[in-house]
Length: 214
View 1 (cartoon, one colour):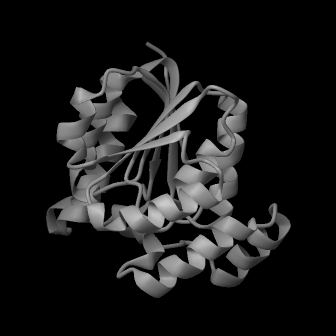
View 2 (view 1 turned 30 degrees about the vertical axis):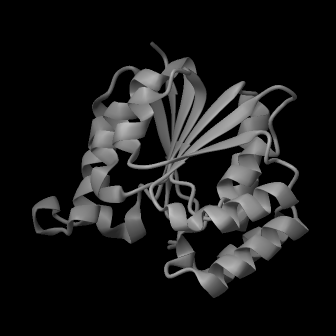
């Protein structure tokens, strides 16, 4: 959920690169057919993810939390030849819409989907990644952080979505729901982890950007 005034957000989006036809169609279908459509990354964040991939120039990306595939398309579409994206999603009922739009974007051969609990799937992956995008169940963000950290190479980048959690991170964690507690714990773990340089970008619901230095 965006923290910015919606008019300001629309203005920012109007200045950003236009959303392409495939992403626009995917966004419409997501809002028409899913229960929680606001889980989609959306236009402005999608542009940012694409540009970050272009800057980082990774060979391998791992995404935790695919949803309908918007962010995967944004990132995979910016990859150099030969690079690829692995994405982990717990809800296999979303596969049809994902595969439909991966194919429409011409990226089906660059994106591999793994279905299941990320805490179980990630340890089975043999690759070491240059970039990891975390956008899954907020209650288990702390556990996911510990799970993905060994899979990120030194010099690689960890991105985590929703780290401001609609401003609820300012609440007393003892009085918060499990989602809010998870985000607060994750943020504190990241803050204290000296293996990372880190910053939170207040776009939409907050995006953490952290570089693993060792």
